[in-house]
Image (cartoon, rainbow, N blue to C red; front, side, top):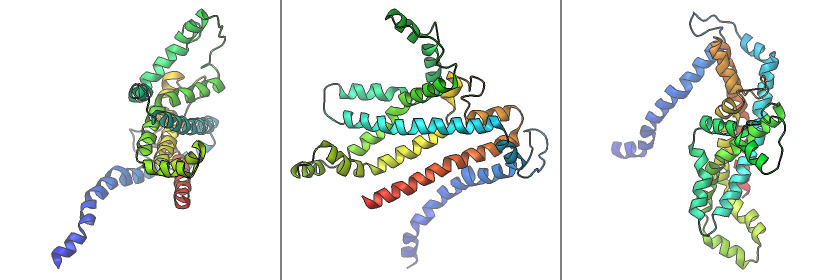
Length: 291
């Protein structure tokens, strides 16, 4: 009887190491961060409790509020485009044609390169007057005036497009994996019913791709809201602080010996990420139930 009971509770016993690691690497640092966010610790001297003053300071700082706007705008542009183009690539590359494997490698290859290195490469490509793009277009008879990275609006658009170009392959791979799990019999049944391509896509492919859609939506939201390397490499948050994200702001506050304040900002960013992720999970759960 005892052995049977132990066997039935084996999954609980085996989950203990995972819970211990979760506590050590997530729960404990989270509560420690909450404590530090309520102090004026500079990273060296003794911390002094100041309550919620760090949070009040953050929401009173125009630079910090601009960083929230930049971070959210970047995510609103990047996350949807990553999912749209990733799905389009996956649908195209799921078909049989000569050179399909090579095209998949070409699309995915930028994702394995460091975002910092990729950002520096695009920085040299987009340099006005002496960049690769300027040189090529000049030889083609097209004249480019101005600096795309020198104004906040165009610079943010460039950042979004470069980020999408680099990581769309990762989104594509997840969608391809989802497409390959769909049984061909589903498409055969759809053809027998006389459904066209778009009808099949709407009522067969997309509902069965919901697990892949959920993964991509969540990971792209998290990645876009925590953007760091591509901005550092291309604009360094400039011009001024016009393209500075919250992740960069946190780093600069730490380097400025405002460790307690930067911890408070990190918690704010945590909740900024948590809210859309939670909403997306609820929406996806409802869509899975309806499907």
